[in-house]
Length: 190
Image 1 (cartoon, rainbow, N blue to C red):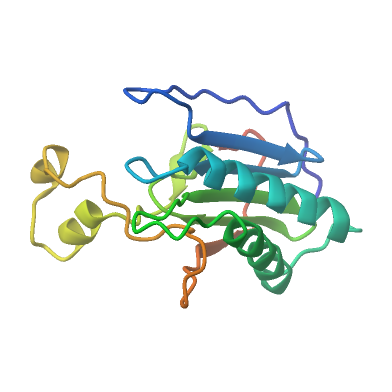
Image 2 (cartoon, rainbow, N blue to C red):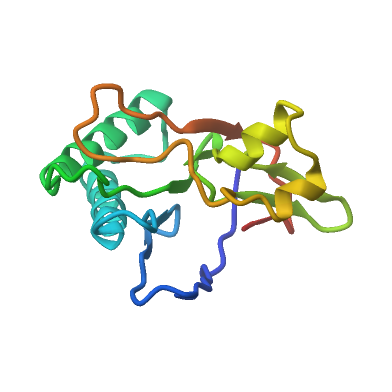
């Protein structure tokens, strides 16, 4: 499969925070990573930078050809967790970050995410083919039928993320991993 890539674009804003907790990184025009530090916790910007930089470094050092597997991704993720562990300050409100990753390889695309940053696969004249599922309290409540779609918009705890990377946890969170093989000219990933 031959895939032509165009330079990636990114848009992000600080919002109501005093510092930027988002980190965006890419490698070899095939790996794209977005981490969003968890607001309301200490050092979200450190967590997002650490995870992004660690993943890029792992890919640079370990990917020698254009093949890829879930096992390789999980090894990269474990390395990122190990790096994150070194910055743990044992606070009750541990630092943490969401993770959104897209890697283009010879078999297609591997997309992985945890948290509430999304991945969209958009095909012109068709629409959205893939949209990642939020790992958030409000989406879980909607999925279980406890609140309606309209109630999601104004739900008091809509900013609570249910899956993220945090240091030194006994049970490390795992991202959803999706394999996309149907890629056509004109497709966009956002």
